Image (cartoon, rainbow, N blue to C red; front, side, top):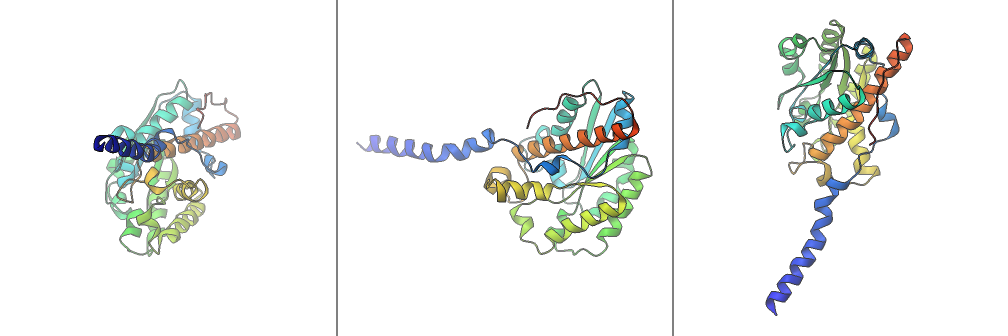
Length: 264
């Protein structure tokens, strides 16, 4: 009788636990439609693709670029983005280099720009920034100047630039400067005529609109993303990069970029 009750309890537990275990595996990736479109066209990317030349993307940032929270380096957003871009830019060589280092702030990244980023002669630089300064309560003083400095150094090489703002995660959103950092990054980007990939808004959409629990798309540490959210960010960002390159091609009058765009 006891073993029967134990089996029944185990079965009941399985019924309760299974949906939570399978949610991330079956959950569809979606985003607000405007996040699939960057503010600025990506002219350098468009030129390279139109000329059928290899495309080099460098992703620089801190731990959420390096892939903390992912099950492996292959599940980080840069690795997933390389797959997304290869699927969209058919017949073009694409490589996405991961230059994320955990714990870094903007000044730390700028100190290694020459070797980690510019030496690779990138066509597109994805700069994820702001989170660690917010987590450490370092304030916003000097942040805008550092962003302008970094963007100017990238632009001087002819590469396109996309900034990536902080993640909407429990340990970030409790900080007083979280949304102010997001706003500051957006303002600096507009001044420099570069785009922001609004990761904060995307993840807030998952939480507030789709009502997806944090533990489905944030790691147990309450800060870093997980395999599902890294893959979804890469999917949405890949779509945005393709769209921005296509718009730049249309403006320049070059042949249209051929692609088969994967569904979300």
